[in-house]
Length: 105
Image 1 (spheres, helix red, strand yellow):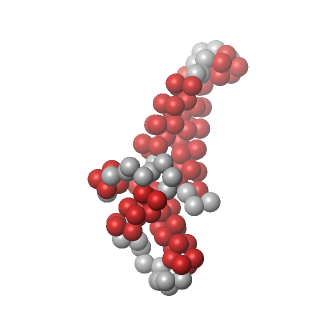
Image 2: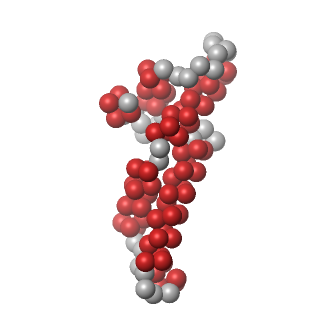
């Protein structure tokens, strides 16, 4: 739910890559799908991530910040999160503990 916008964007880009790959194959659909391996899928997902717009990611994390603020009841404003707040939230996500600030901004 939290990163739904990012996931939806990535899925759209991935599906487009997959369909393009299938259409470029000269075989039938079943044969084209059989030729796709895990490495191909990983590259398509990586390309889909590269195509995800920064604003989509930022808006998704903004939603996380707003929800966290409501849960904590410490701040009632819906101002866009500061870069520091976004960085703190990203680092608190499992698997993102080693993300550096220059990777984000």
